[in-house]
Length: 133
Image (tube, rainbow, N blue to C red; front, side, top):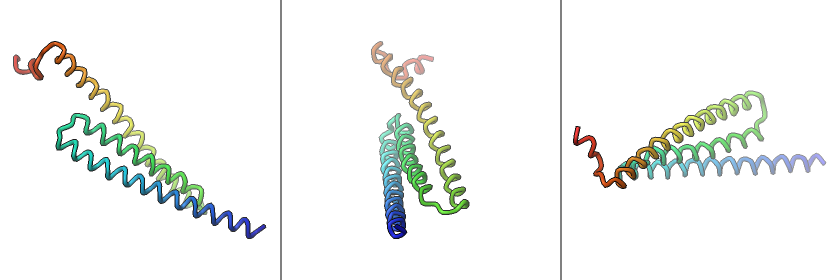
């Protein structure tokens, strides 16, 4: 019975450590792809560049947060739990702030797009109001 418990513990540790590394890897890949796309969109002067970059960063943090939650399964002492808890709290706060930024950026982007559509439907040229002032 003791051998079975040791085997199960080793199996759990192996599975959790592998999953942690996979989650971390996916998070890093997502961040790199979001960063490269952000640079490309910035060069193209895409008005949604900040929103898209923030969404990529948020997705990256979700994977990183998932890996930290999994890490709580294999911690051994109180000091490790405190460190992992602090990391989870920090990443959760960052995720909250990025989601708040996404919400604000979506509102601004929608307002800009609605204004462009309104001007287009009225047959106005962009920035026509500014040139007549």
